[in-house]
Length: 500
Image (cartoon, rainbow, N blue to C red):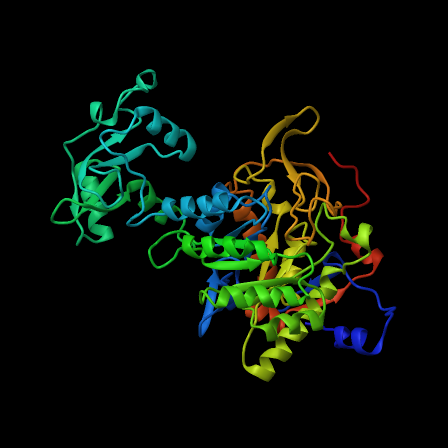
């Protein structure tokens, strides 16, 4: 991969003004190399390092991270993306109890032996069951003596056992008491066989005293077939990440998140080259060994500051989001290609000096699969995106029918008047100004549809195959990227024909 000299060092130590331009990802193209049977699409792996974790790394099965934005990352998208092997970062601009609830819902959703399930007691009101069904989408619930997920199992209640007009009645009026259960010693495959035998989609797991230990859902086992690349933890629950700000007031948020159990914490700041990032990291690490991602930075020295502070990965990008106006408002920012080249240089130098590899995450300036492939070739270990993910039905944004554009998703930046992410932008209600806008993007359907995320991944694999690379590490070491002229880019676009 062609790489500039240490631009960050020269710029900050020797030059007050640099006249060499910064480059966008869209100005580069990947040059093909000889393709063989070893690097055809079927042989390519998109598994990648998201961040350090202990003596190893926390890995993604695809190099995709959904942005920590109110409009983007919520429960549905976090589940859908984890099913494909990526991870969502739940934003810190929402109330902490909502952030914790999303993490809990995602963890509870996943297959295997679910230990923390919603239960009711015999005396619970049907109205409470109805509101839980409407809020969560779940429709089968164990009934235990005390209503806890570890209580003595008495029965189950489903949405088919009652009618909503009797909402003032209680659970014991409708619950099913004849149960098929399994011992806590049962394996997951044995549980699946029992559900087939009993013709049930739900199997309670109990101890010898009939206390509920966990639950297995048939729909979750089916997902193992449909999503073989899913990203799950050791308990077979989907993985998820969460963001915090550098504001001192977020200390309580950090404590609550550590209790909720995300896999990774992202310290979310528009400008991460600060002492506040290190202070926040110290607080987190004093309480947990959870991996922590810092950022955002756009220079060699910015990366070195966060790496030396002890961050486990670093996010790269400033002022280049689809609705970001930071560059227009403050004049701060940088082309993403140049920022990535500087960060990759810094990462590699840090690795040589310390034998510690700090992954980098490209965040912003990515509009299509060409930009994704180029970002990886430039050195990105993973890619964080907002605009790409908000277009899917599973994103957290509301969906509307637009008179002109059909179904659209509302999209707003964290620094817009709607977002008002004070923590990320180091502001408050009395000194806030907009660094982002609000708008809409066309909704293109569900993330799982063949033409959506699966096709995006196929295109990236195809680019890697053309570059004779089978892994993302190969892309960093072997891929040849070339800067294009304006006319060359024009030749590469549709031209000289009338479109149908």
